[in-house]
Length: 561
Image (cartoon, rainbow, N blue to C red; front, side, top):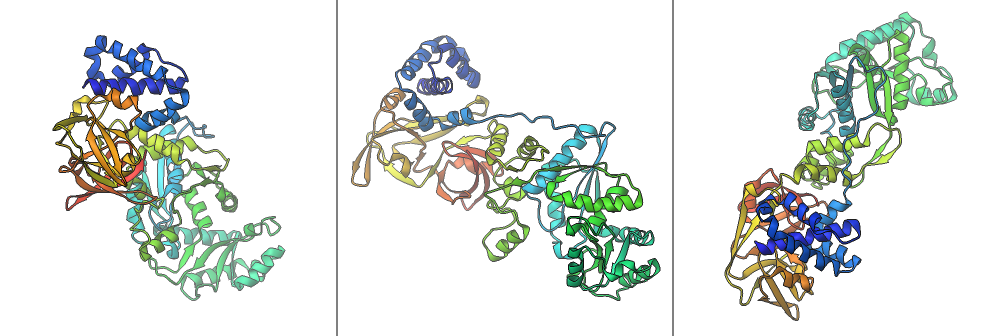
């Protein structure tokens, strides 16, 4: 126990020295240790001299050596110094939101939700919670070519995981008659016409800012063509309903855009229909009829906002207040739904929760908490500046949540089995959590035959097996000869011997740690088998979610350090 206490005093003295680039006071070090390890408070009086001793050792070291040693023996404490624990800030107020809001999240059911969806859904959820009101989930499924029947359930599951406060659920495929009715009304007031021009011919005219011949069709003629569309007399590509806009608009894409079209294949999984609205028409109609007060979405929708305003203006509807946030670049994971689907079909990815993907279920499988995703997205906010998504911030946010809960265990990757010559039988007692003595300890018993990480002993003449004892290493070519070198932590510290993980050779479970940059094979403590679905910390490696235990083999997914 004294050896463990001396080690704690030393590493916290070392951390303080690195943090302040100076020599800490014994009271500061003592306060840190007793605050994080209350089990030692009854011994506060006798700890003082030990703290002075630790500080003297730190004072004798050079500044570069302090940092390098801290990185070697307690990297988690160095990580603490590098972390920025920004609190979730209050986002800017919304114009006209004082009496409550009606917001919406409108995914397409083409696959599960990913990090891009998370930003939109969480920011809207934030403001509904802030101001009160309704939060509408609108499933935009009016393009049969972009509908995956399985995605309906996946979207709902991901929303539940994120904890969004959805109050209303609307499926656009259930509202086709509503869109048909309003399309007819738009034709009747002269705001739309039915175009039978070939697509390429219309494109040529549009680029020149010229009207196609169909634009001057009478209301009666347009209504007749519209009814023929509904009656199934046309096929895909033959006809479309266009909204009359400004043919001189500087953006050709804004000129007489399509509102309704025919889709013959594939068949829609929920409705028997061939006439479907395009996004800008159905969204404008729904935003009005559902009473949406504020719309928060990416600035890639700015042009769509302009298109939708034509519909509002034609009908004299009050427009929502629009906010467009900057683009968010996300590296390191796949976000394209089509690429994900093809990769799953070809076997490149194991499924929608493959850790190389940016889906919510892939994030969850790694042990990232939904609250961490929420906090990271609120940190980003609704600013118009383009940004790059910070994985480091997400991991920092997640660490805040999992660190107090995650039990600690040893994991030995790429192990070497060695006999420690002259070693006594020893029972190591390691805390399940360093800041929560109520959880108890793990007991590791060995008579000298242990597993150690190959990389941690290569080139070393001495190492300390954490919570156990020191071992000396003699090298005979590539073969290590390992011998017992005493129990005293200060002996290891004197020669800057690294403290490494280990396992008894006869008390271990095979374990594979899945990482984005490649799997890590090794062994872990048998107690890990009881942590399925929990996040643990493999000491000196990082946090991981225990996914399964099959045939005595542990499968875990790496989250972050």
